[in-house]
Amino acid sequence: MRLKYKARNPKGDTVSEPEAAEGVEGGPASVSAPAPPEIWIKAVLIREKDAAAVVDIEGYGEGVILRRGTPFGGGLGKVLGISQEKVVVTWSGQQLDIPVDR
Image (cartoon, rainbow, N blue to C red; front, side, top):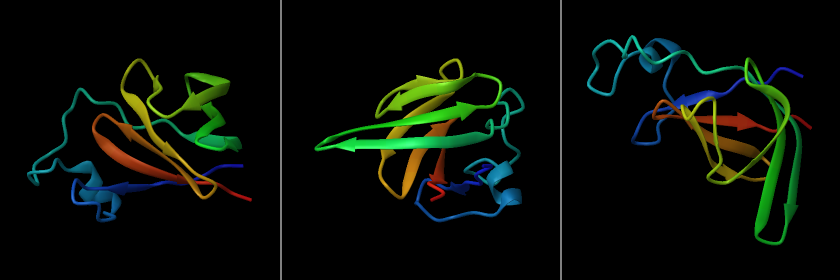
């Protein structure tokens, strides 16, 4: 199961891939920031106010358990939220929505 995600700018608007490759100011993106890895959601577990997701992260591991606030990818990524519909993460400051494929 390969999941695509949408990049969002700081205003929360979905942006196209060329726009996502540019910085917030419209200039080229930082050369030092690697592209986000492919992330496959295997399971989402929600119990009352607690949530976790089991994911495979390209180049970082399989069966990784993520919770809100969990960093991954050597600190480049961080989980912002988990719901039944999507997992929201940031990667090098860029927000990514990863839909849950049912």
